[in-house]
Length: 68
Image 1 (cartoon, rainbow, N blue to C red):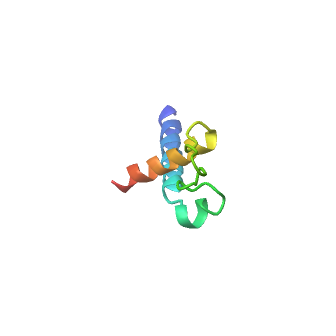
Image 2 (image 1 turned 90 degrees about the vertical axis):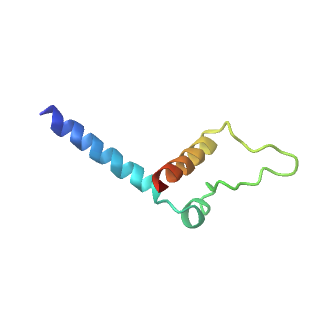
């Protein structure tokens, strides 16, 4: 009984990682302002502390990991 729960959880987690990995940065993420190449402005440092920046970095990391 417990193996069905773990198998389903594993299956759902693989599907979610795949959904994140296939997000196109040029087509989808840049349209909503979640592209990795955001311009911080003149003399400003890129934002690395916000939740949005961390999610964008996580998506880029998952895509890099899934390429191999």
